[in-house]
Length: 425
Ligand code: AMP
Ligand code: GLY
Image (cartoon, rainbow, N blue to C red; front, side):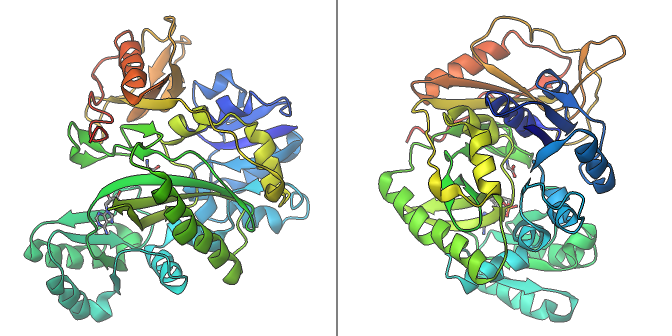
């Protein structure tokens, strides 16, 4: 069958890599893709939110299934667009419809969902310009640091964690006055959770689900988790502190009530759920839902999946996941993200990349890359390349990733040398 994959990051290259291993795949199209996905299928120069152009590509290329990588098209209703158009309504879209995509598109929606279904999460209040005084009182009752979240999508930048109460109150005002545009017209203030973060991933057809390998990502730009937040600088899977007891608790108290909650609320859901957790004393609370896979988590999660992933996506699309199971490789996978100097602030693009042809045991997942007019591989984004390796242990896998990185170069290349640093205790 022909598949259209929507997106252009390292996550989508990892999807493409996994899909091309399936005997069920005929042709893979990626919209818009990057230089890495161009080796896996046919890149189409279409924006992920240009639904009319996507429809045309689906009809022109006899596409039998659409897999959506990023959140934007989901939150904007790509799945609903397909359902409402008789010419394409029969084509399964892997990714939830607009209403359920609010689990990521609105923090307030996600908090109400969790409270309604008794899913453990931080205490919160939702503030708008009318009840700002209640917001101040909630803040005053909290211990620092103070957690403020723009309600809507803010490109990963909408969460502020502040040490001083004065600053928190000031930022609350700034956010309500449009610091993050429309996204912060409402603000969710949360109790600050403590512990260590991990991410779990579920593929669901709305009734049944499969749990994919879990991962931990490293969001800060600087060593030791310091500096500005990024899209993610590296990831490790499995997470060594995820004991059997913790996994059982997560499945029973978080995953199952999430799936039954979707049913009770009549929110049809076919696709991935990425649940960000804070874990303390083998107890987990939900920090956030995302309605897609993580990036760079996918670059360690998919390499650990042994099963035919396309077969699982087909089953999800046909609501037959109950008949499927997932086989997972025991090895550890690590990924280290190479980024452009300056990222997550301003950075230059178009830097020639060298060393990608050298023999390596690593998997190179392209994020921001393209071919220039001389067909040379050049940088085309902040996050450039995810270098994934396997090992019997995290340290063995990381050694391999850093070994591969030592042979890759581009001007002002930057990366963290301490991925996994907090997992030894
Ligand atoms: P989010 O976009 O909701 O995932 O938040 C971004 C990051 O902020 C998370 O990955 C956490 O590191 C941090 N964070 C969010 N909510 C909380 C919270 N309630 N307590 C502590 N840290 C948080
Ligand atoms: N790595 C975090 C995310 O994909 O949202």
